[in-house]
Length: 447
Ligand code: SAH
Image (cartoon, rainbow, N blue to C red; front, side, top):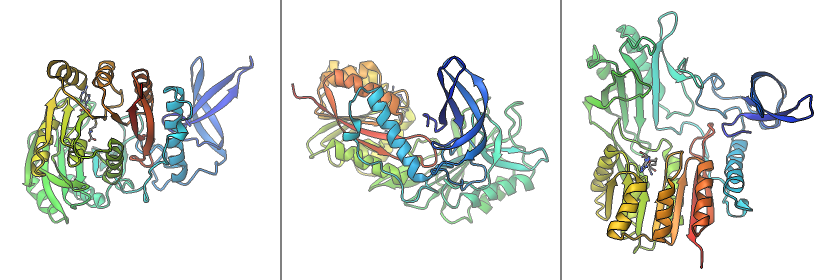
C-alpha cells in the first residue's frame, strides 16, 4: 500500500517490464479488476472496478460515504491492519530514506486506540445546497470541493450530530443562503464545532460570508439548550479563498473560548487557535515525548515549532526552563495565556522561524540546551536549524513528526552531524485515515 493508503499492484508490459499500478480503495491482498485512468512513464494510476477476491484485511466500512468522502482513506481496512500499515510506513522510510539498517530493532509497538471511532474534537463542515435546494453539510469528496452530504460522521465526537442538525434545520427554516465557491455568493460557509473531551465544553462557530447572521437569536436559543454548550460565535470570512476561517470572530453567546486538559495542563481554545484534534492520542504522544526527553528537573529545554505551547507546558513541570519557538504570533499569544492560567513561570516564548530564532539566540546570546524537541509541519526541519542543533550539542533530541519521509531525511542528516536514533514510537492519531505521527529519540554519539 502506498503513502496515501492506495493499493499497489504490478502489471507486466509487452516489453517485459513490471510497472506499478496505484489503485485507490484497493487493499493489500485483494485480487481486483481495475481500469487504468492515467499513464506515466514508470507507473500508472487506476480506478477500482471490481473486487474479485477480497483481501483478508478488507472490512465493510462503517460509514456509507467512506469511499467518496476524502476523510477516511483506510476505513475499508481492518484497524489491526491499519496499524500494521502505519508502523511499516515509518519503518520503510527510516530504512530507505533514513539509511538506518534495522529500524525495527529500535521501534516500539505502535500505540493505537482502543476504540478508533469518535475521536476527533474538532469538525469543520462545509455548508451548501443540493439540486432540490435542501441544505447539505458534510465533507469534501477527495481532491474536490463537492460536498458529500454527511449528517453523521463516525470519527467525530458523539453529540456533533445534534449540533449539526440544529444548524441545518435553522438554515432551512429561515431560508438562509449558503455559500457558493464558484460565484462567491451566499452567506453560510462552514460550521465549526469543538468539544473539550475532558470538560465536556462545546463550541460552535458559524463561518459566514457577511458580517451578520439573520435570526441569530433564534439559533442561539436553540443551540444553548444542548448540554455542555459554552461558546457560540460567528466568524467573518468574506474572502474568495480556500481558507476556512477569517480573522474576525464575534461571540454571540457565552464565552469566547472553551477549555480542555491534556494530562493536568489546562488549555484555552478559541475558534482560531490550533489544538490537537485527537486528545486521547495526543496525551500518549506527549507522554512519549516526555519519556524520551528523560527530564530530571534541572534541564534547559527548547521546544521548536511549539504552536500554542502544548508540549512546552507539558514538559515545563519536569524541567528547569523551557523555551518555545513558533512562527504564528496568535499561537504564541495563546501559549502565554495557557502558561498563565496554569501558573507556569519557567517558560519563555519566541515568535519567529525556528531556523532563524535558534541560530540567532545561539550566536548572539550563547543559549544552551540539554534537550531539544522539534515538532515541525510536514516539510520537516530546515538544514540551518539541524546544523544549529548539532552545534549546540544537546544530550538528546526528541523529534515529533507528522510525516515519516521528511523525518527520515532529517534523522539521516542528524546522523551525519553526530546524533544516533535510540528509540522510535509510532502513535495513531488519525484512525481510519492514512496519516501517522512518530516520536524519535536521538542522542549524541560518543566520540
Ligand atoms: N507542537 C505543537 C504544534 C505542532 S504543529 C503541538 O503539538 O500542538 C507545527 C507548528 O509549527 C505549527 O504551529 C506551525 O505554525 C509552526 N511552524 C511552521 N513553520 C515554522 C517555522 N519555520 N518555525 C517555527 N514554527 C513553525
